[in-house]
Length: 291
Ligand SMILES: Nc1ncnc2c1ncn2[C@@H]1O[C@H](COP(=O)(O)OP(=O)(O)OP(=O)(O)O)[C@@H](O)[C@H]1O
Ligand SMILES: [Mg+2]
Image (cartoon, rainbow, N blue to C red; front, side, top):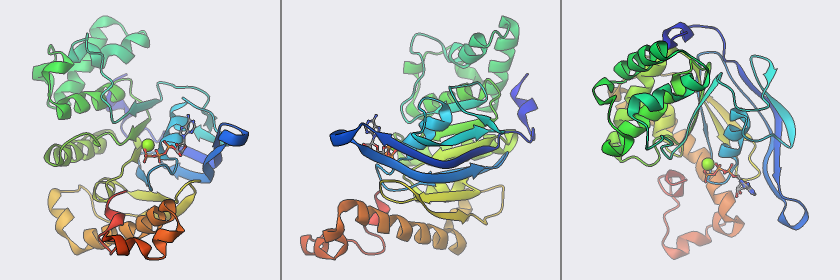
């Protein structure tokens, strides 16, 4: 089964119902997420944004099958998520490549675990690397490559087992602005080819608008869904679109929502306006820009 077959599979419907996450107990009790319901339709690109500590990674970890929610349930195509599975690929901010394996062996890793025969593994890995423009580097080791290339390989590796769902937690958070912009274009192109469902977590609001069909905004902790916003921009998306009024209006609207929550997270004395006395800009382009 190659990735190309994942195209338009109609699978990959992700659903979270009334998810609650509580860490610790008694004195150490932290309610991270409260009553979160969300979904990702097959082939849809959905972002999850919200202030730091609102429970975004906790949600992704539940969908990846790394942790169980305290309440509620999460399903893919109706099946309850209980553990990690090859139907879901995961990409984190930190490159999680194996430094002792070549680029191609890294990509082949999941296929090897799945028992795919050697020649098929090689062909599939090479096809994917070719699509990502990385075939020339198949025999390099990760530390011989730039951060952007390593993260591209991380994405390719997550795609190698033909998952129906790609879960990404701030995958470009460690990259410089230019590399990040290129990665966004590469990701949107790859997603358009493979049309798998994506849940994407980011602190970068422009990034979420550029990539997504829909965006969920979470409140400050305990994280709940504050808003669900459709992104009506046409596809394919191009870098020029980020200069349109439609794009910037949506970005401003999202920033205002996030700003409210960032202020709430910082405490009510800040939202009373006291913060301006310390010379910190909380205007429309202020704290809301930095989650
Ligand atoms: N294993 C844990 N034990 C206790 N508390 C935890 C644990 N993991 C997360 N938390 C807490 O739960 C809350 C939500 O954390 P989470 O990492 O999901 O937030 P986030 O929205 O991803 O934050 P960020 O934007 O900074 O990545 C935070 O207050 C965090 O400190
Ligand atoms: Mg996080």
